Amino acid sequence: MLYDILRSKVIIAYTLFLFLITFSLFQLEADPGKAMLSVLNIVLIVVPLVSMVFSTIHYFNSYEFIELMLSQPVSRDKVIISEYAGTALSLSAAYLVGVGVPVCLYNFNATGISVILGGCILSIIFCSLAFLASVKSRDKARGIGAALLLWFYFALIYDGLILIILFTFSDYPLEKLTLVLSSLNPVDLARIFIMLNMDVSALMGYTGATYKDFFGSGTGTIYTFAVMLLWIIVPLLLATRSFRRKDL
Amino acid sequence: MIKIEHLNKRFKKLHALADVSADIPGGSVVSLIGPNGSGKTTLIKCILGMVRADSGNIYFDNKLVHKDFKYRNRIGYMPQIGRYPDNMKIGQVLEMIKNVRGISEQELDNDLYEAFDIESIKDKSMRSLSGGTRQKVSATLAFMFDPDVFILDEPTAGLDPVASEILKDKITKEKRRGKLILLSSHILSDLEELTTDIMYLNEGRLQFFEPISTIRDITGEKRLSKAIAKLMQHGFSKDEMNSTSTHQTRIVS
Image (cartoon, chains in turn cyan, green):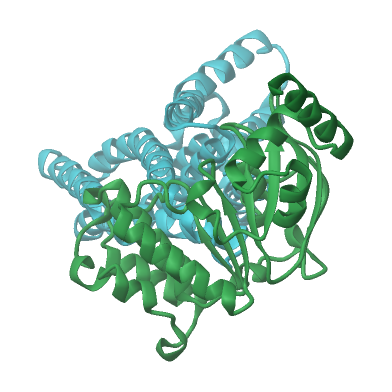
């Protein structure tokens, strides 16, 4: 039950924006490998932000729709899940077209595929997080505030915290710890996943070797996917649970 | 048909519903009245499962309402303020609800659709509608699927006299067919002719739930609004009522 086809304008603008950025990066850089690195950096910052803000705004804009549906014989789970599916689908579709098409044209290899896949999963993860934030908050302003805070945390603050931890405890063996810590941040996880397919892991210095050992291996890839899947499912489950008890 | 047991709901400090219990039988027309903010809409939303009560149970045909959502198939709900997706057209909203309910065209009750002439405005977007037109759409939706129970939250508020009459006629018609109708209103005179029972809420408490005849007997007033006003002032107790009225007669004489 997907009735939400009606918010195409923003999604189209977002697609165009991604497309233009990626396309021009490939035009500017002679070496597609270097261009991919720039694309990656943009993907890691912009995709979570747009996913978060768009999902939150969309949730609150379709509040009337949700209200209307709930006065009809439709279960709450179905309403929230179809809202979510609609948003997550359109966001990842926008990403696939916006970044996927130019990447496929200029740099179709393991790196390219991992960028496409990673960004796609990131879109869905942050859509989940945004739904959790919006279901938990009472009005639009709080919802967007919470979404932005989460984004700040995952995209900027978290890295700082990790650096502090690494500096403070640099006398101890930290390899295992950093593995765990990076699982706690989907942006980090995506970055590592893509970087390792990029053969620039030497750039990651200090713990690069550990990462390469672990994430580069088959189990590592499976582990990364499993953790990312958890990042999609857990917030979504929490959101549905609190939506069941929500007053409208 | 609808049974409410010890329902409690708090919104932070506000005790919106305080231990409300009632058994509403099928075939009656119940007027839910009370001052603004007395919990009428909250009670209605609890019955619809849109607001979750803190404690207490609501049964619809002996089934707990928060366990199941299918009972809403049998309810037509008209909200106080109809809120619809802004970017949809009236026709689209109607189609969508028809889809959700999964009822074939032949079974639809198009009385209000025709009476309000929704056909001619079905391409208007929800955003552009006036409050009254919205109410017409809400009413059309509530009555369209021929449900067993109608829950109408301030149905005539915002409607022009003509539309209001049309709606009243429709409610009367459904009443004759033995449907349960739960109306909330703060203007009584409007729906006086229709009502069979009165439920009076004040500050979240159910003050009384009695048939109209009983209320007329107790207060000795012919006009319902006066009778209710009297009850509001004196509380619901037969003896007290009689003593105050004799007292008043004495002063007058």
